[in-house]
Length: 240
Image (tube, rainbow, N blue to C red; front, top):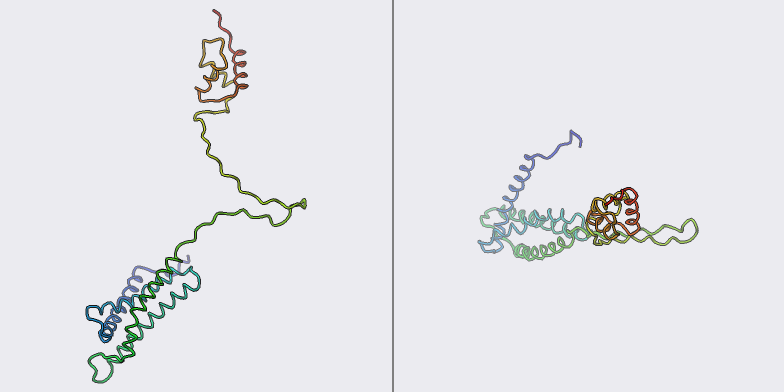
């Protein structure tokens, strides 16, 4: 990153949040009065600005969530965001224009304006429900598909078609006998047998196998035979 590139600081974030709160407060005052003029009960008038300006605030979040979605869901999110912004601007303007009339102290609205304001709540309910479905449908990452080996682009140099490459089968986890090694040399096997039977002249193949397995080694009959032969040729026979 270039050292001269400006970066957002904590002050920038506080300034943005402050400007948003100020704009929300001023719009809230006008929209509450519009709700009273539209004959919404006073205890519920605070919900009217939340429906309109809240849709604007969350619309930005929805656009970010749907940024990788197909065109139609993103277009729907933009439509809701623009509609909520337009409704808020229109309601604020109507509030100012009506109160700006000479001799007007109480906000009064015509039938068309009251009808439009009354239709905002059910439209917001329908839009929020549909937007929730779209976010749940398009915000999850796609599941990883299993890799498929690529087919050969053309025939082999011999002119015969090359059979498709098949993936190697997974290694089967076969149980193994613990502690066994098959890489011991013949002298090592002979030494192991001699250590197990130091005073025995005649060592059978079964005795040798027992000594080898007790040492954690493994050997076939031929290797045991060679180890016994090596042992007999290198160890002198003890006399009685």
